[in-house]
Length: 186
Image (tube, rainbow, N blue to C red; front, side, top):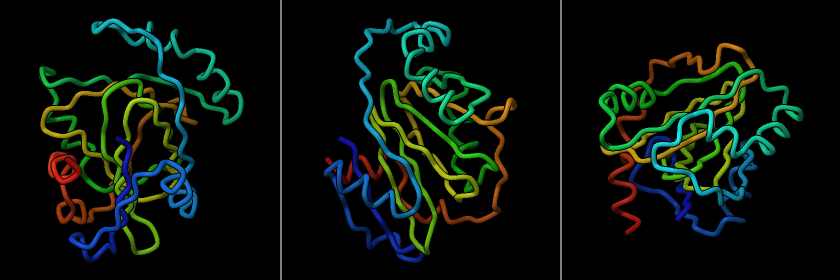
C-alpha cells in the first residue's frame, strides 16, 4: 500500500498519515514532487537483467526521456540475498541533494523516500507502479530496509547518473526506518 506520512522535521513522533492516492499526490504537489501511478503489468522473470527490464518499459521511458531530456537510465535491483545490500542501504540513508531532479519508477517491491522541505519530512512509501520525481536540490534520503526487495528504474538528466551531495545532517537518524514504518502500517 502506498502511503505518505508528513512529520514536523523536529517531531518524528507526530506524523499525519495519508493512504488515499489523490491525497498523497496533492500533498506532494505542494512541495513540487510529481507522483504518479503507472502500469507495471509486465511479467518479468525473477532473474531479469537491466536490458530486459528497460526493454519492457521502453515506451514509457522513451516518452519521459523526450519530455524531460534525460541522458541516462539505469535499473537498481536489490533483494535480501544481494551481497552488498547493507552497503547500498547506508549509501542512500544519509540526507543528500542532487543538482538535477530525481525520477524513480518502482517496477516491483517497495522503498521509503524521505523528503525534507518546508520544515517538514514527507515520508513516501513507494510501491510497485509508483513513479516519484524529486525536484533538484530537495534534501532527501531513501531507505530500502534491512532485507530490500525492489526493482526501480532511475532516470537522470546528466550522463553521470546518480551523483549525491551529502548535507551532513543527521536528521535521517531521528525518523522511523523503513522496517519500523512498514510495521507500524500493518
